[in-house]
Length: 79
Image (cartoon, rainbow, N blue to C red; front, side, top):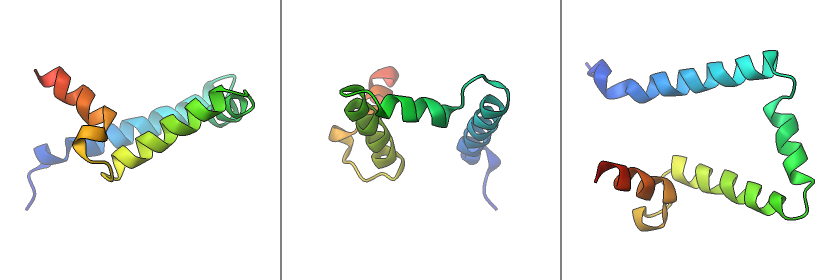
């Protein structure tokens, strides 16, 4: 049987999902609408797509550690 302490990331995902749902229900602008607005900007759309892409690559563990900015930030925090 797995140790529940090893699955603390599951609580983070649940909290993130709950926060997104709450935001989309109660906030004056949904996150999806904000994303579409970012994509209308002539320059910011490239930064936005890059940020989404980098996050997806990090979450799927595709990037080597030396090229993963999220990993490098975490590494710096630990030092």
